[in-house]
Image (cartoon, rainbow, N blue to C red; front, side):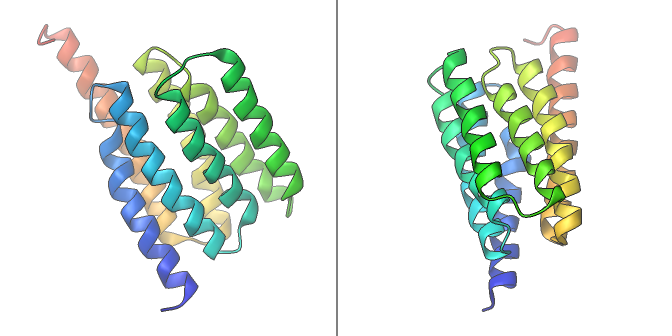
Length: 168
């Protein structure tokens, strides 16, 4: 099996974790699923020789795992600094800015106490990763990111509708 095919398979498994993540009410479950998903995406991008994106995904997996247990702003700023340093060190070209922007937005999202803010900032970060995936030519990652964004919107709408009708 070649590296490209393996990378696409890992992105597919990550896809399943991603689209299910925000359909759970509990923030800890959201972040646990995102930890697994981003771990697989780190390997995916490494296999595609996208080292900056892979490094940022490793940081993201650690960030999600940490955000399960803390909201401290200094931890958030530490992960943002780590993402920035990783991007500088592994800089390949101008397209490396998109993974950085996505990572910074998703880092900010991870440390939000309110699930609406978690979803909103994650959606913005997801759009940065979508553009990156289009540029690097990963069809499974593009489909995954589109579905992830759609899943965030669907879950957000469902949770808001549930609250409006008084079912919670």
